[in-house]
Image (cartoon, rainbow, N blue to C red; front, side):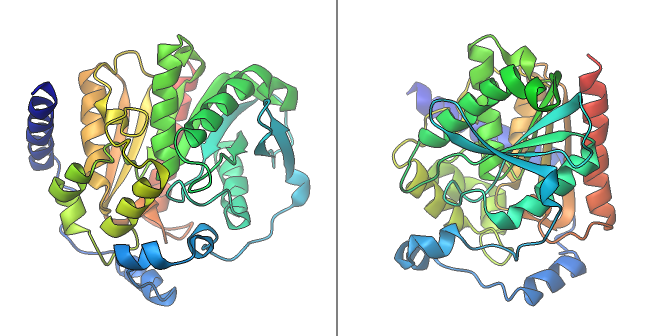
Length: 333
């Protein structure tokens, strides 16, 4: 009965929050529409996703872009030998640390095609980026990704200075599945009494309620079920592959954690044409209610994780400025 009441209240809060925040006018950015056409994007049904060889999904991605290899170190950390890429294109010591957790539906590893953007991220924010290549499903189901991600955070917090980072200025950053892991890591750190080591956590395209119920009742899941790169079917497939039967576990659906007080400041980025939009809106509201400092923005006309934006696009610049502002404020405390 308590769970039933909780979900009823959760749905009520979500509906209220949707009324309060208007993201856009349901007009897809023409540049993003052109991007989807250029890459030949087509939707796949849940049945099609289930029938494809998993390798086709694991290793799908954009082409590899070159960057100076002297700007990255490839290391393995902890007793589990977790692969981590350390990007320092500035080649300076005592830089702030960004611990990055990649997206990919808990299925894709850290692909070579993502490395250029991580290198660019280090330059953009004047930081050392530690990119964690956590274990992925279906070979390694939940909680492998959580364990790797959290253990990597603790190792970097203790050893990041050895690689030129300032461990008093640590930000966690993640896209999509990685954003989910960032939320979970921050909560786990709070439980262990070490959340003060995290000065900021940044989540872009954040899934926080991975239950089928949410996917069938959330307005944004219905509005953006197909046609905009990230689909409802892909969300279903990702979570059933990663954490079958674990949908009400707070380390899978972190919004189910009742007490969020004392978490680090947060940046939450949402996109109008993203099935996960309302998850991010609701989590931002719950964090604020718990007294957590939140910078959040829902980008009109954009798709999941702001995919397809060009580096000089106004929305991309605004996104970067939000993170810079949050870093500057959070790192001073």
